[in-house]
Length: 125
Image (tube, rainbow, N blue to C red; front, top):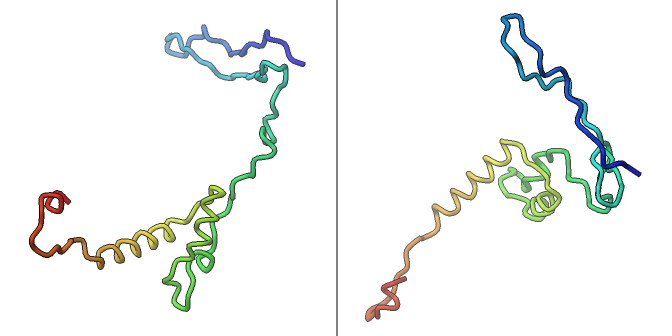
């Protein structure tokens, strides 16, 4: 059970520094626990919602992200699962994925060829 009378205890705020200038020094600051409406004090070291899966905290190895003999193909299933659990990639891995996507999109045609006669519906495309 907790009380609603919690306060934040702040250090000496009326002190002067060596030059005689008043400082608004808020250190050391001592925070007291937050009290929810139900009277529970949440933990500061554990997970508040214990049924939520903890995010992945490691960067995957290159052979997990890239597959194939020369490691040029991207393992999409692994990447989707890794991002689903809030995983992160290294800078090298992210740059290589962006370079691969840029190369792929630059090779694709970006114009549409339509035979005559065309009406205004096709012209607006």
